[in-house]
Amino acid sequence: QVQLQQWGAGLLKPSETLSLICAVYGGSFSDYYWSWFRQSPGKGLEWIGEINHRGGTNYNPSLKSRVTMSVDKSKNQFSLKLTSVTAADTAVYYCAREIIVARGAFDNWGQGTLVTVSS
Amino acid sequence: VLTQTPLSSPVTLGQPASISCRSSQSLVHSDGNTYLSWLQQRPGQPIRLLIYKISNRFSGVPDRFSGSGAGTDFTLKISRVEAEDVGVYYCVQATQFPRTFGQGTKVEIK
Image (cartoon, rainbow over all chains, first blue to last red; front, side):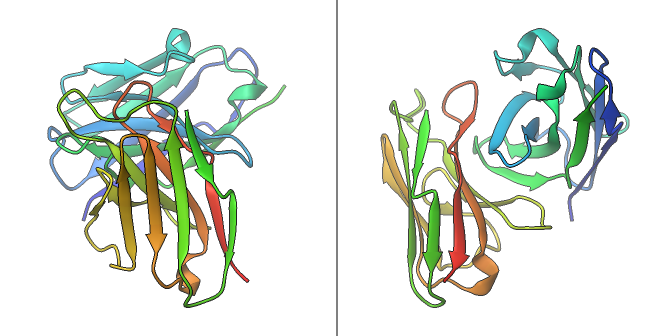
């Protein structure tokens, strides 16, 4: 059974950098895209971006200037960094797996990490 | 932009429910596929994939869930709502970047 386990700092001050890691247990790492999403309190889902096993990325233009994703194939992990956070970045952040041959098929999700930005 | 209706759907147990997802532009990809999926978010549970490419039911999803549509108009149907179906349902498109979601439809029991 595939499991995505994510972790990272849950409380940040404005201007700090959000850093999250998602570890993939089970399954192939190279047959999927690996994505990050977020959900602001009481709101819907927002796609942040994706990365493949070679490190190729696509980012949401609304966040592109502040986002960096990376992959560590040796550990079956991928990560998200978001710089210069503000209160507007307070959200639950999710990692997820997407089937390459069925785009939009986000078939496995992490448990979510609440990140709060507050001075 | 993906627009879901209704935003709230009170349903009697055993009765059907239907959620519409309308796109402001065609979701047909240049490869001929339409990458429109449906996700379920239940309280305290991981987000779950229900349907991908309009109508393909994901592994383990009960057959009371079905997806249909084409181009810009899509529908998720639950043939007979059960208590475990309470939650928020999202359509998501992966034809274009950035991926975008509908606002979500909350299904609750009357």
